[in-house]
Amino acid sequence: MHAIRNYIFRNCVVFAAILGLSGCIEGERMLTKSERIPEIEGGKWCELETKNETLVDNCQSFDWHDGLYHAGDRLFGLKRIGDGKFIGEYVEFDEETGDPKSKYWAKFVVAFDPDNKRMANVGDDEENFLDFVKIASYYAEARDVTLSYDDEFAIWNLFGAPYAMRRFMTDLSDHLDPINKRYYKMIDDADSPGNYPLQIANIANNTTNEAYVGEYICLTGVNRAKADQIVLAEIPAIKKVFDACDAIQGLKLREYAALGGLMWTGGKIPEADTYFRKAIESLVGPGEQALRHETLEKWGVMHFNSENYPEAIRILSILLDEDDGHLNALQFRGLAYRRINDHPNAIADYTATIEIANALNKPLEIAIAYMRRSYVHQLDGRLDDAERDSVIALQLEPKLTYAHSNMGTIAEKRGELAAAKKHFEKALELNKDNTHALDGLKRLK
Image (tube, rainbow, N blue to C red; front, side, top):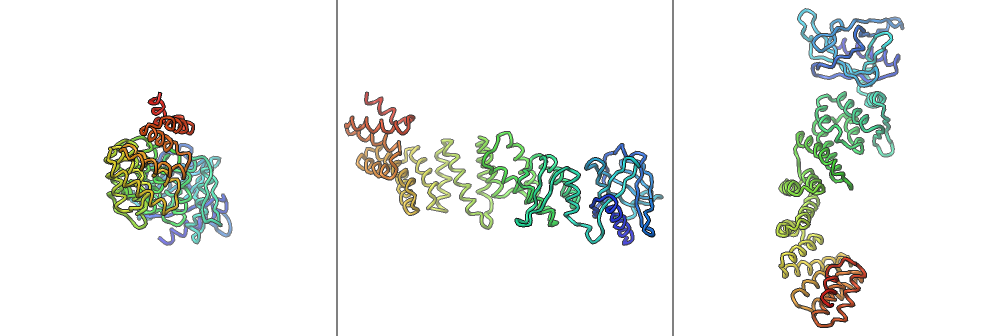
């Protein structure tokens, strides 16, 4: 066996010198069938040996049997990766029985010379047998993409047509770890070129095992789902990435949360609700408490925007039980209470919002909370309290249009019609679509 290995290595280094290419690989699995390649019919498989520094051809004709090429005592599988360039692999077999002699197999890059109808393996010597840079460079050339390494940031950069880059990554991962090809295949055309540096880094560090492949694919899905702008037509492709993630290692809080956000973006509220619920039911890993709270907030706001106020209150209450100082949760829960006419709880949440926003030195949030609390006071007939809160809100932020319209309604209820008209007109000056002010002016006519 050792002799066979050295023979292959020796021939690789000879052809590397002749053709300037690289990339031998070995492994521990049996040969798979490949598509027939018409142009090599009648050609020969050649190995070159050095004898007294003279190159001597040692060629045997190819024959095709049962989906594989035969040459002498070897079975070959070949896969095209470029013009005249293939991935080849072979096992030795017993000519009498037809059985492989051992599980030993060799995988290597081969080049075909159409003029002389010759094909031979090309690679590097034993010391650099798994030299990632040389192997990756070969595939980059074959797929017409540009690969470079940034020493300063310790990252790989890949440039080229999206399809060519995708094929480069598939070829490379298949070359170094064929078992994981099935996972990368699951996300063909759904991957993001922006994430290729991570994948290349994993492969370069010989980390193409299932756990790392799964993490790469899952993270790809999460990053795609959280993109600032998502075209609705892309959602099925992004969902395909999560399907691959689920098939490898299952979905966790991070993936469910991203899927919930993705479905919400696509207007698929029932699906988003399911994924957000699964996220909150998932175990919280180290450092994921903030993600859990962010997910609860999004889930609650989604139901608020869908006018499912009781469900929004239930979800936001879970968040506030875990973080009673969550400003946005208090604001939306207060609004939800107001929409179902639960004014005492709305007042309580607006008051808590004022206290927390004041502690955090957030004047705009303080002003908005005063404005909202003023509106509830006004609805309940507490006009002095309503006026006090609206005045404070306008002192903090003079352009709060609904604080002006609320002052108009307070004046109207007191019979101060000239003052009411003035406030309504100011509100419309700031926002011509302020419905409270529009309705108020209609009532004064």
